[in-house]
Length: 317
Image (cartoon, rainbow, N blue to C red):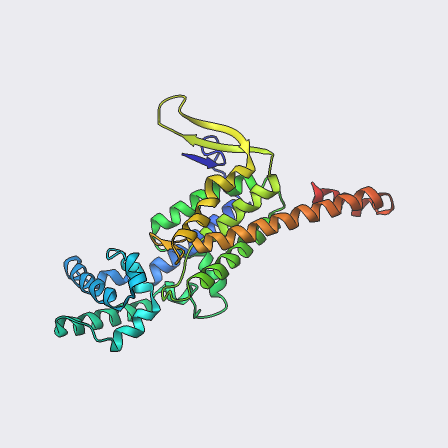
């Protein structure tokens, strides 16, 4: 395994740098939704839930066309619940089988939808019918569980500890938010039939990685590797920043090309792509902006006031 950034030698010193500000915001929002809303899964006993899901899977299969059946995974409950077409079809579709169980499963589906409409995922997440314009921002700081949060914070910490050394802090925050917006646009465009809203900082993080790969490009940055806990099989090496593309970002493009929904194993790869494209574009603009400022310093620096010259020079870095 290899990760951008140094995970072995950083001293934990919380401060108002972008890495700690963004981590604090993500943790606060997660704890707020965890405390303020109940978990819908607690309403069902495990054995009852599994029985109802099995029947739901059978009914969902009946609504699919032959092409969709080829890629149907009966264990992927999320795919069934996400498909907004199924919510509509289930009401009047002529299902075959035990009609009593079918009606009971319809009720179960209705209960799931009711619980979902009361959840933070619906309230603050981004879906084809967002609850407010704020959803475009709030979805970037919400997570579906502790593991989802921990993984995103891990990569956010690694990327930002490197990136904040190369660019002004205002750029870091801007790239995060704008990449998240780009991820949201791509997700909605590629997943128009998903009932469940998308959550998570991964689109924004992909944008930050793409931005770093463009801005630092051939410059060497820290990479942490781990093969085993044995001495000599883990540590830090220095490699070009552009390797972020083949190591982390290309896989999302290939996944979307292979799976037409852009979603597999509950990961919104389409949002990753949107965030990557946004981050890449912002990186190119940043390089252009730096080049313009350098030209101004070179051509007009002698006519600028000492204060303006010093300020512009600091911006170019």
